Length: 209
Ligand code: PRP
Ligand code: URA
Image (tube, rainbow, N blue to C red; front, side, top):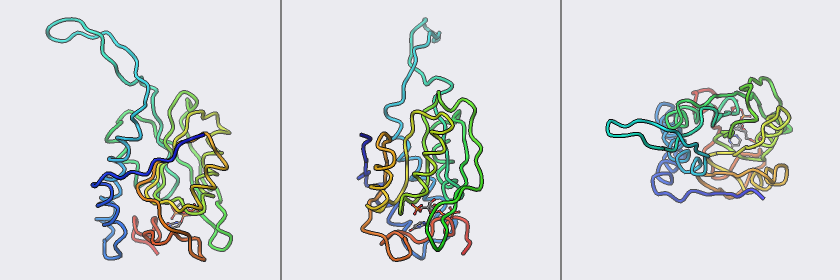
């Protein structure tokens, strides 16, 4: 069974609190999402495999441990997931980036795919699926299923705010994946928005409505 990690780091809690505030503007919201992704990514990559390499320092030859070149792929769920990519790429600049486009139907809240472009060597990589919000869990579960259908084997899901309903649904659909969360919220409202949440993450990132 995959694990659920809720980050209690003070910096992550502080920045997540600022993200929630309705007066936080688009520019600050975007910067905060990037900063939180970087902080969470540092922890979420803790168990990446390393390989031994023989190198020369100015003093002598030595064996060091490094990330293999085919180590990681970051897969944002469009569109709001894009906000987390730059923070992750600052940590792992050589990561490949795949994109899965999903939107939630406003009536049924069911996810619909509109775009999918993934690295060819997906099966060799540790995949981090990223999205700020895990509400009903429908989008995350569908994205993970796409990736599995295309051969991905080693998937983790990283989000900022999760509802208990979404965590349960994602775990039920994909019991093998670890889930990393900055904050676990209380419940979903009648429109399947997270309470207290932060509103519509895509709109707040991109200034749309
Ligand atoms: C939001 C969010 C997730 C999804 C979560 O995206 O970024 O992808 O909703 O909801 P769920 O867990 O109930 O599926 P949205 O569909 O609003 O699209 P957007 O990113 O284009 O704004
Ligand atoms: N999508 C969002 O952007 N926010 C929510 O609270 C739920 C789904």
